[in-house]
Length: 160
Image (cartoon, rainbow, N blue to C red; front, top):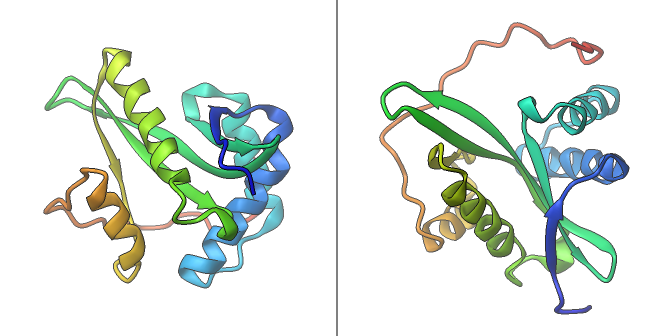
């Protein structure tokens, strides 16, 4: 295993591995089996439309070993965007080796130089203490907000 890790923007050719990572992350963290077709369409939509978000990938020796997605939320209170980190995945053999740290550092650097990002947010499963510790170590803090949702679409074949 090489210690050389680089971070880059995703490409359309990364779609299959991003789908694989999303499916694995949902299974590992929430015990959920996602619909492959829905995840594939969702990943392709992000890759095709930067307004929906973007992925960063971590590579070593030409192999993608980790990824995350960033989406945006406008804050009228701060007159800027929050960047939401989502769909974080690092291959098991590469965990605890600083791969996520490098991905996060890239996001943080990009946000700091964008001129219109007021902060970075993410959500994490309450029981995922390992991830929470990583986020704390990197300087993120738990907020007083709770996340609520009402789901309107469970149709895995929705292609909007």
